[in-house]
Length: 148
Image 1: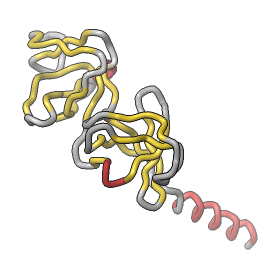
Image 2 (image 1 turned 180 degrees about the vertical axis):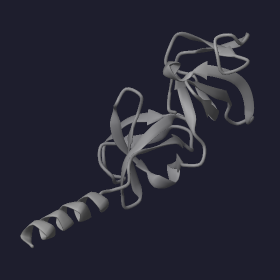
Image 3 (image 1 turned 90 degrees about the vertical axis):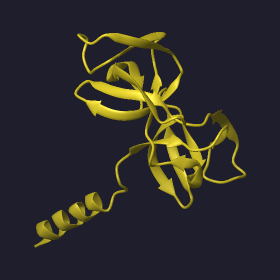
């Protein structure tokens, strides 16, 4: 009986854990990332509009985020866009292709640090484009961007 009770408690703890992390993007320009979930907390750095982030936990009206360098901090929840996913280019120059594969023609190049909207994923490839214009550019390998 004690064993069943112990197993039940363990399963309840596992099931009641916070939801797993998810990807989102920053929804305003120059958003402050703070060292604690409140407005009086120290600003660690700022992130631009569209910046992809991984939300690792929530606390009240705040979300703890992690960026591509594994830096963490807190952002006020209304400043995070959960509906639009973006990616950040990791390499100096990345070929953008007409389709999801190396056999497709190169249609453009994108540079390190640029942010693009994620439109679609297919295998090891992601279709990217311009965020505000909602315009697709083409496909890049997913290991050359962060945020998918």
